Amino acid sequence: MKKNKFSRRHCLVILFGFLLYYFYTAAIPDGMNVILPQISSSNNLNYDVLLSFATIAGIISTVVVLQAFRCLSSLSQV
Image: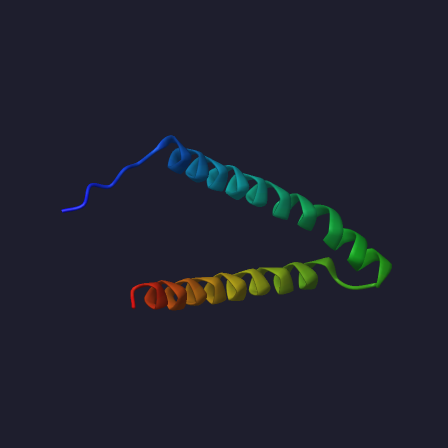
């Protein structure tokens, strides 16, 4: 059986992934709180409607990313 080696580089890659995740989760809600009110006021649109569209788009993008990950992971096992 081959021994798996978990080196310092692997830890750094995982740490970098966590940092990117936390940056992403901080940037998206802040951007939504700044951008959507500006779009709604400049285009005379309802803010609640824009927020609901953004929520639906977020759910759809999550489903698409999970399906793409499932597809790519099945290809890597071949």
